Length: 189
Image (cartoon, rainbow, N blue to C red; front, side, top):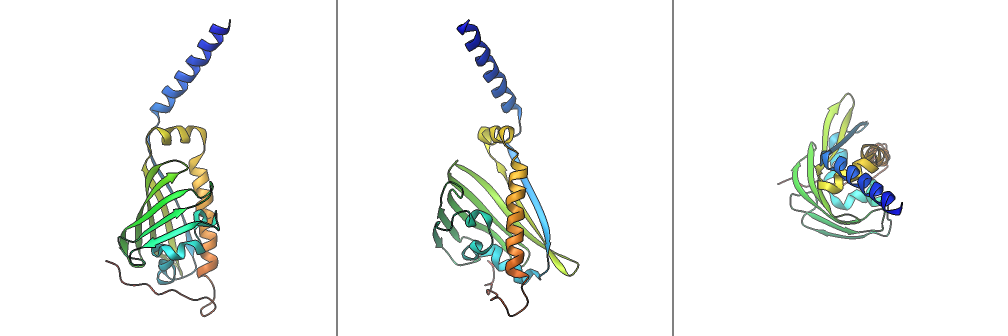
């Protein structure tokens, strides 16, 4: 009887893992919002790693996060290394592309809680009296990514985090002129 139960469990595990193996390993999560501010007021918060803590929900998950910055702020090649709690994780961000007031792309290399790489794109486009901010996270996570998408609604999880980030960024940049300091943006490479 015990052998039959063990064999049944083994078959279920094999079938489950077979199903996981059929899932796509590539992922793409994207969300956007309109911010009532011009692109030149928003962009420094997207391209300068030192300003990310003012709005980025992943950084805000650990107020005691250890942060190291190298390279010139807002420039291609700048790096932000972080070591946070279990909610924030540990890893590094590297700026790969900067088009002032339009686009920033970076590579995120996570080391904890799960090792992996993904790309993050921030795109700004004029819309009405404001600016549409589109935030995209994409990559190929291999088998672990496949398993996570079966067990967790990653689209919903990342959409919720992006929504928190949008709300925080709006609070930072939609303030009346003169009531909050606007950082300067150095020219991109």
